[in-house]
Picture 1 (spheres, rainbow, N blue to C red):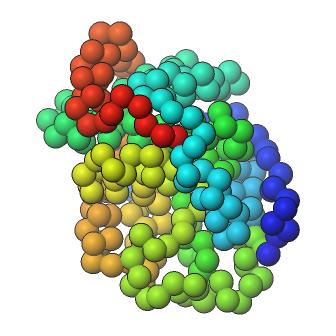
Picture 2: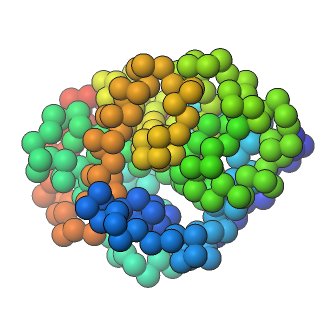
Picture 3: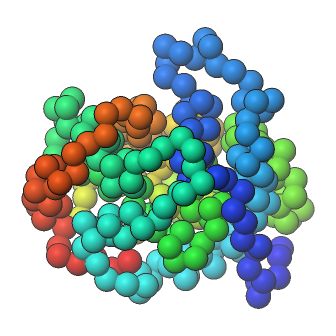
Length: 288
């Protein structure tokens, strides 16, 4: 494995975090568009390819365990959910040519689409907050340790993870103990006992896990685990409960991918509604 005293080199390969989201939307089109699915490997932008090279090369089991120790004590700061949204809003993708929307507007686009379809209030709230873990960028984490398709570490990589060829440069690929089908895990152990590649999904799950129902937590924790909920991989690690909650993630995913780009929401007009919704589920401050 890599030297535990050495942090993997930070990079900034994407023009902005939205560039990854644009790629994901192209990689996983709406079902009615799948017949027109293009060869993303040949057409993907160089910055996205470099992003995944860094992600797959550096997301070792050792790195993930170190980030869990660093962040899951939740001792970086205390703030309320709306304050966290405003904090995320300071993350400005000035070089991104494709959007002029703020981070809060992006969050509200998802939640408003869920709201229009008449879903429960916890579901609307999940849409609003699901990307708040991206504040990791504001704590100094590189993009490849914040966004990207997630996958288990500590076991063999699935070829259904995007750009699987980049795993060859990961030190764990040379550790036979970590490259069996189950690796360090028991068959059917359940995803609660599996270490996922580090990023905003896992981080936010731990921030909010005491306040939301299980379907919401699954949506937050696994919405970037496309190899499982879109490609059907890693079922050998799953419990019956995991297979059920992948259904919840699939229910959420279209709102995450396909609502963005619609008419920008009126944040100030909607703010009282969402502040009331936040107050219904969360205390005034959370530990981050």
